[in-house]
Length: 272
Length: 303
Image 1: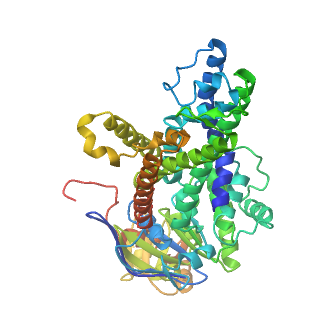
Image 2: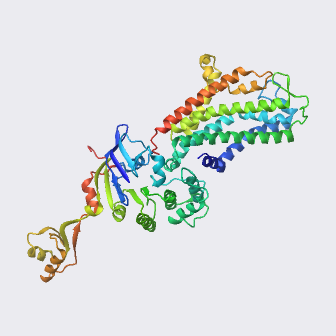
Image 3: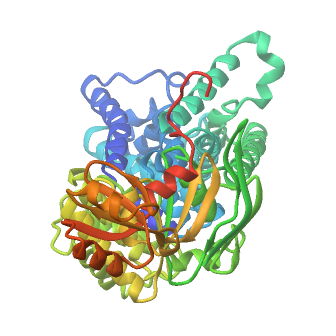
């Protein structure tokens, strides 16, 4: 069943259109930087953006920093919101279930497909950014002296690669949290748009409450509270506190919402 | 093949299916007849494990549903409330995808199974256009092809001839009768009396969620013990057969008589001109109308 879902993902024109759209923003940023040569001052703006003017090979990291906080969650909310509700709306859900595909299996396959979409997107964005970075941006490769960490000391290439993978893993977990919420809503409503918008509403509400002092007691439990903690992975030494709390919080969201999605879907009357 | 006991489904305050006891035997072409909104589709969905019953039991191929779904459903082909497919893919690719889902879809033989199914429903020569561009009739055929992929022992079909033209309906009817002769049990749900009357060996009639009738079609349509005579000489017949004429109008009489041949001979001997003579049978329509109340989508004052 996972294979079928992956084939559907890869063969869908929308998948590639979404990825192209997501990819367009960092590409635009690269072109703008190359043309104007105006980077944000170190410490302001998206992470690593100031460094890429001197070293273009860092641009993949900067591109992910641009895409992760907003674009990717939107795409994940839409893809996962579509998962069950989209099949229901199309009428194909009932034919899958009488084939028969077990409901748990179907839910699992859908989740895997959504995460495959995330990996695919991250991969495309990273590769495009790498190529653009080398072609358009600074190529004073400073690998020998090491790259400056967010804290100011320098990191070796090996350290940088390791931490990049850690950061990617952390970002995946954050997206898994979004996917779990969207998948749950997708089993509740028969409208894929409703499920996606519901998830986005939760994300927006969470982001908004984070800026509100009166919401202080809620903050540690908000879905997006620790999303940007991946920057801490590039401090020297790594500042684990927020990252670990983030992992724990996302874990709770994933377990609770996937559990709710499963419980709801198992006992749901398919009447579309 | 299908057996239910006291099957009931309530959606909130509405009882969609009310204590139904279905009994479909192996080899039947079973007509499940009912007006729109009478609960046919909900019953079909419960049988296939899509909707969970509020109370009662349902058995498919001798095993309890929905718990035995994994074992039973691979041997069941279904068309539920219209066909569905991925609109951006071709019919062939859609079937390949559905074939890859669930048990029994070996990759090596997939192409053959898909081609066979398409051939059976008359889509063998279809090109690679996406399903989005299919006509309603083509979609219906594709839905049937998907139901036939695993050569099922039981076909559960909800309104299978929907959207087909008269030739198409004839073709699908022939296909289903062929499959039935080869041993497939067919459970056909429809609101079209004519369709059921032409194909089915047994019928169940659903009215507002209740099964009001379940019997062999031949039994429902057995002779009523009367003979119908068409003649221009109605008065002559009435005076000849005083006492056994039960009903008559300007050119038709209903006569209580078991032997139509003897009656015919007697009329002809008396010089009565007979244009038509035959045993009276109740039509399925009369049986169904007698068993059901008013239409389910009729909302009259005080009803």
